Length: 88
Image 1 (cartoon, rainbow, N blue to C red):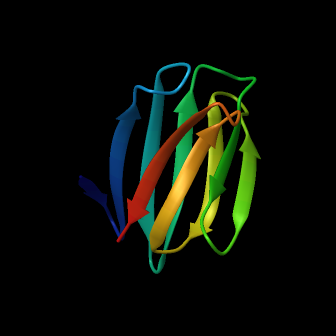
Image 2: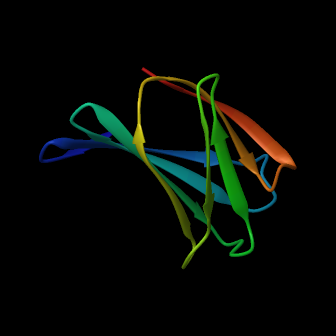
Image 3: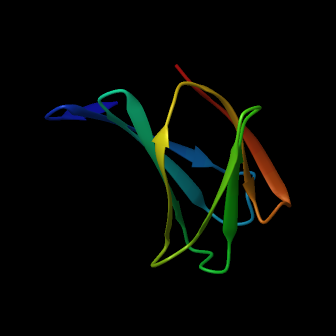
């Protein structure tokens, strides 16, 4: 984990997705920004929990989810690959 001003950043490498994928979590006050860095520019990511679901397409190697609150989420790449993310 590293710190840059008020933001804390952590990177996690997901090896189970179709290509090399890095999830970067950036803490910003009371919410988190998730950046999905991938070489698969055709991918669509779905982030869901029991309250809502969001999707993001990849542009220039990155998909972004903003205003993510604490909780347990399922992240899916193209509804083929899945991982669980817990934000505390």
